[in-house]
Amino acid sequence: MTELYKRAIEEALEKVKMNIERFGRAFPHTSTEGVYSLNDNTDWTDGFWVGVIWQAYEYSKDDVFLIAAREKTAQMKERLLADKHLDTHDIGFLYTPTTGAKWQIEQDKEAKELTVKAANRLMERYREDLGIIQAWGPFKDPALGGRIIIDCMMNMPLLFSASALTGDVKYKKAAVAFVDNARKYLVRGDDSTYHTFYFDQNTGQPERGATHQGYADGSTWTRGQAWAVLGFALAYHYTGNPDYLETSLRTAKYFIKHLPDNYVAHWDFDAPIDEHIKPDSSASAIAACGFHELLQSLEPSSKDYQLVKEALEKSMKTMITEYASKPDEQGLLDHGSYSVRDNNSPDDFVIWGDYFYMEALLRMEKDLRGYWYN
Image (cartoon, rainbow, N blue to C red):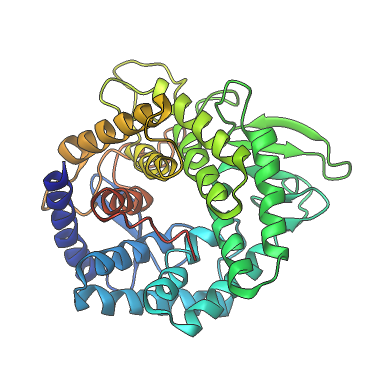
């Protein structure tokens, strides 16, 4: 398998070089018919493109990637200092793979300070009275002030990191409060997950689970399930809380149990399986990173270890041999979905799919475990 991973990485590196020239100062988001839509650093996904470039540099040590990564991280700095397009819970997605990556790789003091500044921005969405990070809308918005989202599990490493970088426990306390509530309310009794959940803002009482991009409120949107697998594994890394490791494993086993024969997930585990069913390779790329993370803490002789390892290897093989893009295409990993419900890039390239595919490859080949460990 090692040669398979090496070849896939080398092919990805060539694609990243072409995209650096192709995209210039813009940022890729999702694609239509194989062509990425670009934005001027205004979307929640922009950190992933920067992270791809940092990954390319960390693996290859090629100065082409270093120069581009520094330039793109500088653009992320501008956005943070201007406080533009940051009214979102996705601050971790924006700054962990950018300023966080620069800090890890170059030990750049300014990058460290910017990473903490980003954590402070995320803390502005912390509802201490509810123990949640508000997902969307203005702070304490009447309709959205009590809503959380499973995706936000992946923003918690930014808060855990901020406590490690500053010695201030307030960030970790906020992260633990959110993770505990996510574990209690977003993870269902059968180990599947809600995409989102509502709390009463006045009483803090739980109200209901719902979806935003899944097939139905009670269905299991596969990208959300993947966020849970990786997010809880990372929460265990930061805290050592065995409950988080158990939750990551439970959600991983559910994910594996419901995979199709080729081990790459459909967009929702409860969507009707017919000729119209869409895959979501990005969900499987995220889950692959979560599986790899889990394996660091499971006993190698255990049945769970063998189950997760087998699923990881089969999923990676399919993604590399059947879902990786052709040389003349823009993305790295084809057949990802943004929103099947809205017919928004339902089966195409998505930049977070590229990022986590690259992370999964680097985990498998060099045990480089991503930038979620500031």
